[in-house]
Length: 502
Image (cartoon, rainbow, N blue to C red; front, side):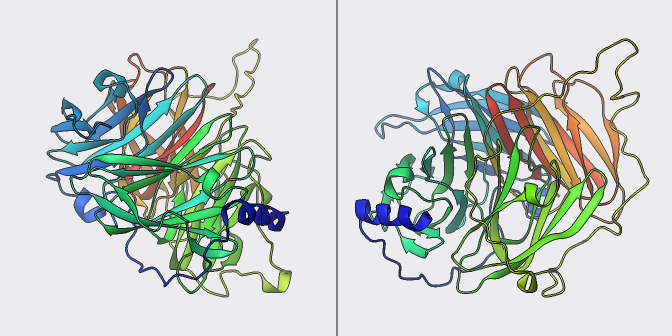
C-alpha cells in the first residue's frame, strides 16, 4: 500500500531526487538542554528560542520561565511586518522561582515565536499552547547547530504536518531541507535554498509537498545564518509539536504515554552507515533490559509500537554505539501507521551483537518502596466508591533527554486551566535515587523527598494551584535521573521535556 501511495506522490509532484547525500557530520546533541558545564555555573546569560507559539482568537499560550538565581528576562516577539518593531516584555524573577507569561498579554496576533533572554542563570524556558480542542507544548532551545534533525513526520491521510522555520537573528538565513523516508534521502523540491529574512518565520505545509507518507524524517541544514525548526502534527483531534534535535548515542524518555494513549518510538539515522540500537524499558516493578534490539538502516526511519513490548505505561532508554535521532509519539490505539519490520529470529539484534555503552540498573527488581508523599494512599476511604481512572484522548510527541543529570528545572506547572499536570522522573541507574522536589513560584507544598528504586520511574502528580500558571519545580537527586512533564486534559495531551542544569 505504501508503494501505491508513493506512485500518487510521484504523479502529483514529480519524481524526488533520490541522490543520497553525503554523511552528516556528527556533533554533540543540541536540543535545548543546557550542557552540564554551562548549567552548573551560577552566572549564565543565555537566550532561549521558542519556535512554535501562537495566541489569537482561539488559542492561548504562555512562555514559562524558571531560574535558580535572581534574574532579569526579556521576552521578544518579532513582528510579522518587518517594518514594525518587535513586541517585548521585561520580567524580574526572584530565584529560585518560576513564572509564566501569557503571550496574549504581550500581543495577540496568531503565530508568535519568541526569544527569552536571561541576564543570569541557570535559567530555562518552555512554552505551552492550548484551545478548547488542542494542547501542545515544547521546551525552548538554547543551542543552535548548523544541522537539525526532525524525526516522526506523518503525511498520511488524516494528518497535517507543518514545518516551522524561525529565524530570531537580525541576519537573513538560507537553509536546505531534506526528507528521509523508507526510500532514502532526497532534497525537497523548492526547499534547496529557502530564504528566511532576519527576525521572521516561515510555515511550510509538508502534507501538500510530500503527501501519503507514513514515516518521514527531515534534516534542516543552514547554508548561511541559523534557524530554529519545529514539526507540528495535527490529526484533527489534537496537535503535537516538537523541536529539532541533534543526534546522540543515548535518548531517555521518562514518559511515553498516559492512560488512554499508546506509545510509539521513531528512530532515524543519517549518514552512510546504520546503527545497532537497544531499547530498555523501565516499569514501576523494575527494568526490562534489552526489551528490543534491531538495526536502524541509514536513511530509513523506523517506527516501533512499544505496546508490543510491554503493557504501558513505562519509561524508555534507547542506546547505540553511534549517534542517531529519536522521538516518542503517543496517541489513541490505531493513531499511528505501523512501519516497523520485525527481523527474523536469527537476525534479531541484541546487546551481545554490539554492546552499547550504558549505565544499566543492577537488578530487575527492588524491594525498596517508592514514597510519594507522607500519608498518601490510593485506597478509598471506608464507604466510598473508588474513583474510575481518568483516560485521555490526544496526540503528544517529545524528543528524548540525551543525558541523565542530578539537577533539573521544570517550569510551567499548572499553566493550562482544567488540565492535570505530572512530573515524571526516571532513575536509569543501579542505585536507589533520593529525589528532592522543591516548588518554585506559587507554592502548593514545601520541599518533598521521594525514593525511586533502581531501574524504575515515578509519576508525581502536581496538586491544583491557587494561581494558575505561576509555578515550577527544582528536581535534585543523589544520582543522575531524567525528567519530563505531562499536561493532559479535555483539550488534549502534551509531553514536555525537563531541562537539565547539571
